[in-house]
Image (cartoon, rainbow, N blue to C red; front, side, top):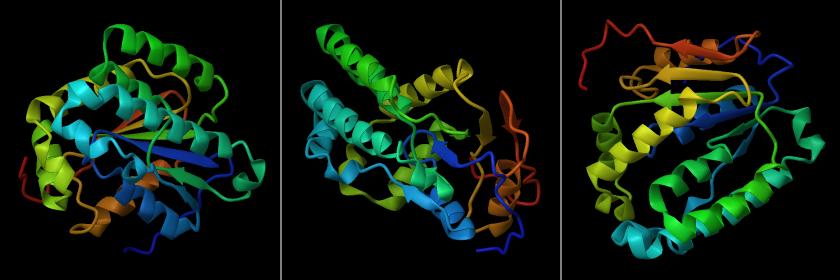
Length: 227
């Protein structure tokens, strides 16, 4: 890991990393946490008892899976109301809005209406990040990363599902205005193989004057393109 002589500005106490399955959210959150001594809040996907069944039959298990995630994510986000946490930087590998993005891909009809009612009640009281970093990638790269990390239950994920999620994420963040947003072209980023990719991205994240939406397209001409 490179040594980055940078400091996170005082106005960035809560940074959230977002993107589709396999884009590298947790990897980046880990690097930032280690570099700056931040507190990390990770999505507890492994605690969802319906997740493996969901990937085997999305229609049957979608509602169960979604409600379990909604409750889990709400509990985590409510914990961020404890202002003592913000004596240090908090880095999360998801935002609460993620749950709704997935719900609109996985649910429909009465199930979606019921979900929307519950989400609307919860959403009003969750913490809003000071900055969201949206890692954007291609379907091909996402599928490559999913296969590479080898989680057994993810191997049943269909390319069409990843494509639908990618489209939903792009559509959502195209209209995102809740807080400053940094959109990153992450298709060819590799924080492990090319440490300078991480340094270049962190320099963008600790930029002191985030407003509105900014776009970052890393200059990676020195490395061969695989995707």
